[in-house]
Image (cartoon, rainbow, N blue to C red; front, side, top):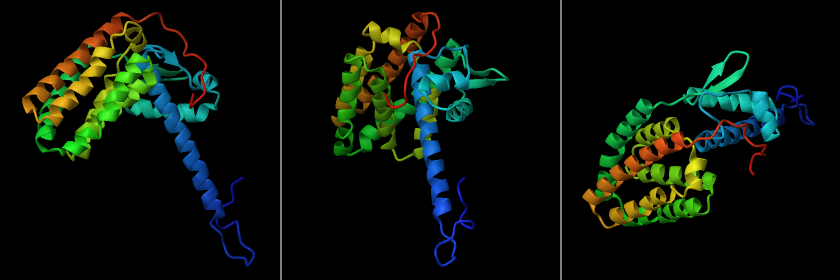
Length: 254
């Protein structure tokens, strides 16, 4: 049992903060594990390991991760608040299905936000700030060529959100981040096996080159084309999915 500050006393009888520190450390560790699980589950959703319409139980997923069910259940509740899954009474969580109309609307909203913002950032951002993102753009291409799906997803997210952050609008970055989560790319494994992710990955370097050169029109056109390319990948990914399978046994951090 974790002692409270009132219960735990020093040698002179004065209260210590050890109880609160222990409790804080325990909470921090628990939150960190919860975040790790949520991140892994989002990756599984995007890669197609967790399938739309399928119901998954927290204990079953916890067994795959090799941890207790509590952080998994908490992570699934976080995903439910993002609209990625929905609770099913006495069963677990069902992965939310995203239809073509949803994807079209998400893409339209992203285009309305991101295309003009890319033009604004191209006009106003310092060249060194743009160049600082080149290693991330190169990581996206490298991950696509090496079939590193988790690395691909993380680098892609980092690039786009970091690029938008140069506009100085935190709420805009949060909005696009939420849209990206809701419009996850199903069947990424199938697309990776066909090497269909590489052309989309290379567009990040093309976009960055245009922005560094100060080509506002070219950068906006490239961004619009990239979003259209991603939307077409969503359609191909959905069409190429195989029958649902249980996610492979894994450990967090591996």
